[in-house]
Length: 190
Image (tube, rainbow, N blue to C red; front, side, top):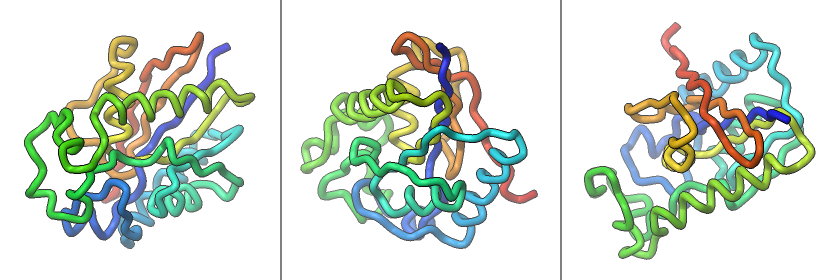
């Protein structure tokens, strides 16, 4: 049976605005971040999309985004957290190496890329193996990107540019396999 996963990035945070590395550390949503989450919420309402269950990273920015999107109860999971950037947490994004990061952050107390990618993929698979058909997960930019990369061999849909705040990735899940079928980027100016 085909199931649907809506995987999305949280709304804009203070650290996004200040260009600070934000993995396991956290910052609150900005006014724009709240509006972005409201726009995503309206998208789901407009398309009559209801969820069997909702999940969030344990980070406050993801939980706050999810709570704006839906008032249903949800499950917080550490497996959905952002990449651990080690000692780069809270520092200027100008210190980041050029992409792809690979295992750069592992040298500074962070996670290896494949370890992080596997954590996200395993967590999403466990979620989809539960008794539900339509799932919302609110996570993070690098987490969404790494999940896309993990399943790129099954998907014809891709987005080279950065995954923006409250971007929604729609995946089909069947026979323990995910396929990216749509990327929903919102126009927050309209």
